[in-house]
Image 1 (cartoon, rainbow, N blue to C red):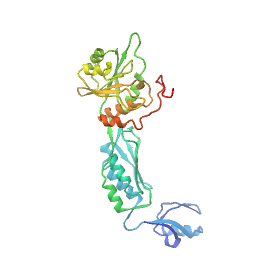
Image 2: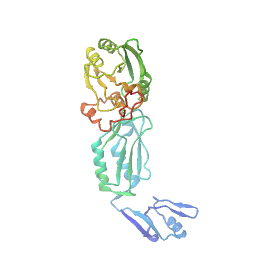
Image 3: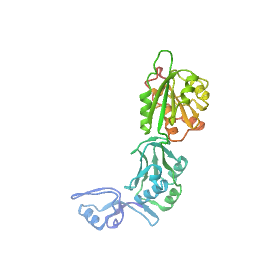
Length: 328
């Protein structure tokens, strides 16, 4: 593609790069200049314009953006997405329901290295989304782009999807110590589930000991069991994890390098996921439990390696529920 200033008599059929004020309005940038446009510009006293002139090996911006978008998401409805029509070299993708964003990160990095004029921007991997959330945008920066570069970018293939929420219901078990009641937490947990389109169908207060936790977990018939203990779970042999094991479950992970959220654990009891929530989950503020809860509810239990990787970017805003702020 050629780009630059040319005399007006050589501009017909090229793409106008800068808007111009004329009698009765504007000739806007991005317009393919017609004979009438040339006459209008000449009448306004303009004799040179800056234009983009695509060559035979170039594809104009909207067609190029559509090609990349179709390659990245061949069937939007099948992966929880809606695509817009291309305009000014841009196609946007929106989620059609709740879930987490599933990305082929390495593939997207490769695409963004092919040609600076071909760009794809997304939300972070596993970002929680709802219906109407904009999750990604394809943008062709120039007015046209080389077909060879487009071929290479399109060859990247499908790389963007929404993993939908697979679980529907949850039970929350809250342990108590002595005469103290179950305390806060139910409302914040219910809000988290509601954002995922899930229902908190039962909350039960139980004693803060492993046998009581084991009995309560064995009686859960919801898709997901959540445990919020009266005292922080500080070891895999503490009452929360041990209650899961006594019930016949398996402890998959204890602890995570996210603050707030360090003291989370999760595992399974049969096919049912069990999440031991950290105390900060009593607050609606973002914490590490959100990242684990959202993935598990979408059928994507994080691996040890993925949990470990959450530490970079895992220093989150201080929760007002924490009695000992880090800065204190």
